[in-house]
Image (cartoon, rainbow, N blue to C red; front, side, top):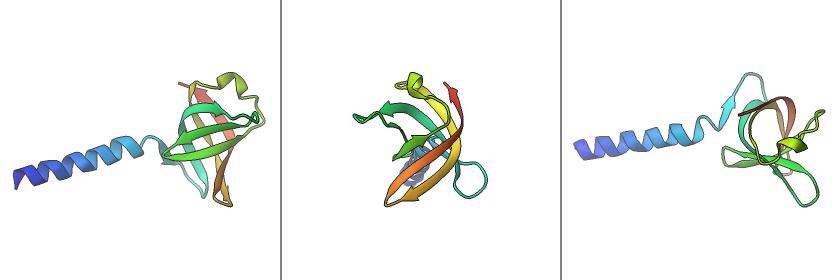
Length: 94
């Protein structure tokens, strides 16, 4: 019985540690805080992978100098045709 309790506790801990910090709801509908590395695709578009999802970045700022760097983004997320886009309100390099 102790082994099952320990296994269950470990599984719950792993779930919180791996998913929790990656993508946190921070208020109203669609507002998120994402953590990850900014990536650039072959067409010059910028993306971030966080919480197992890929988000296309839309920003008034030039985020291209941050490609490959770990950041925390805050913004509004929209989903269309199965693609996620975040309109970036703020970005902090980690």
